[in-house]
Length: 465
Image (cartoon, rainbow, N blue to C red; front, side, top):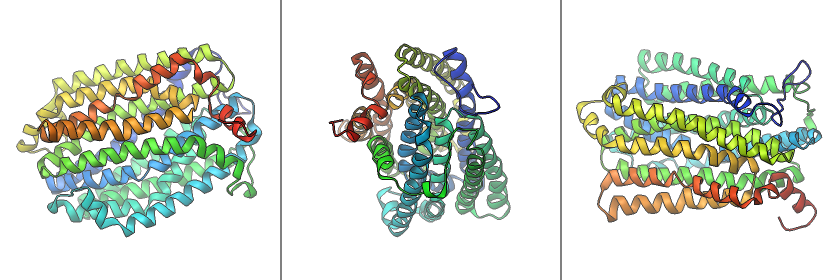
């Protein structure tokens, strides 16, 4: 528990359910705020510009979300490694590891941003962007590309805080971004009439303020978090980078492959016209709510599991996984009931037309499948990520991100001639993949000896990891 001397939370003792809920609640609120200010972009633009604006923000948002794959993968890996260092009592390694992760991710952000700006036209072509929405999608995605470093920076700082058991302060910083984003959305889109550009600019400014605030807080409170960091630490240390790459590459591949396959699916969906593209965009936002709830539980569970794996408290790991599953399943059932009882009202929030609502009704069974998969993925992903096995993460990346999502989408959409519904269905079914993989790995018991620290130690000693 946090006291006057340290802000690091100990997850290796005490009530599992209580600590999980207390830790996950701010993460849940943080993720919901991210959903809110992402949805605000679409709602406000939709109210001002209609279906074309919704489609533009949907396409541009898909591209922007894909570009954070490195940030998500390596930040999640960093969070797990930090948690396992703390559980194993190796806090002296934190400063050099944080400095390495910081420099590595910022370099990645700059290179990726420059490359995507150069290839912006080709990217929108790959997305089968509707002609009517092309200009809006272009300006939205390019604005997000320019601000990519802020997104990467915030993900990195938040991962450090979460790895140390602090979920409250990331919530405060994302709250700043959310409130600022909403204010700027109203100003830029509704007052200045800047359309998708205004929505994207509001998001980038909010992320920049959030990142700077979080970074200043972490540096100033480093003593309370139990680590020291100097300017010399802000470079890429080979030994620390090797550990980050070992776990981060599979996680980044997982993030990238899932996002790439979703872009692939959405590009086919966009080819069916503006109405279907707009409905898919709204459906993705609704699905994002379930995913963010799942992600909150994943993140909390992964940090708790990471500490207990480091401390070799394996029975407690089992209790954490089951608790994550129980909580997330209960929340998913509530959301399923709301979607089935009030579909017209929910889609109507986005300024939907009658044509959109007609297509939206066909999305309802897909929405139910997505919420069910988010519940089952929560326990599986928290376990897979928390134990830190690079091999299992890589297997999940290949199956979930590439083979099944793309393969099933093509099967249902083209071979079985289910068109856009088939692409929705393939995406939804593939999202269940982490659950059977996590279950098999859990029952095997190999996770007790193959985690981020043990694999890193074997590699450092010259043994095969």
